[in-house]
Image (cartoon, rainbow, N blue to C red):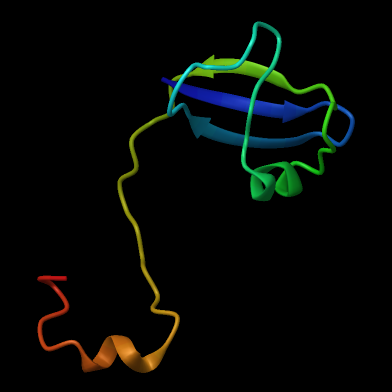
Amino acid sequence: MLFELRNSATERVSHCGVLVFIAEEGMIYMPYWMMGNLLLQEGDIVRVKNVTLPKGTYVKLQPHTKDFLDISNPKAM
């Protein structure tokens, strides 16, 4: 299941999946970094909507460091 999370106060939107459904009804738990991305504080209201996202067709990856060049077979990694 995939969900759209929306902070209506700032119009920030993100998408996520679910690891486990353990929160009480009307509550959600999310990582602190995700709350930061959505500009949320603990206790703020978030709109949660079940969505179906299209599959990706292309991705371009860029290594963070030059250490990637030291890998003998990058395709295998």
